[in-house]
Length: 112
Image (cartoon, rainbow, N blue to C red; front, top):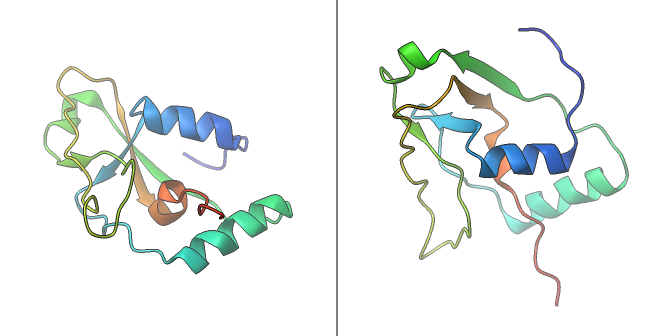
């Protein structure tokens, strides 16, 4: 599939929460520093382009041949740093995130 219409941040967040996007087992775990996350959100606030995301649509008939993980929620460097395995039984086609997972996982840093 080629370039598509840009998505809003809200649309992407909803799609992640509804498990429309999953991570194939070849993806590395989340490993961005607070500084990298801050720079990403600075770019977003300044309306700078943040590059494209790369997805691969896996038909539901083939999805069971692969292992997928959900996105992290509530990342904590010590207590919650591993993505939970996704249950794809009976699901629709899977949109596997092949690149830019770090950007999709990042949450704004907490400001004190």
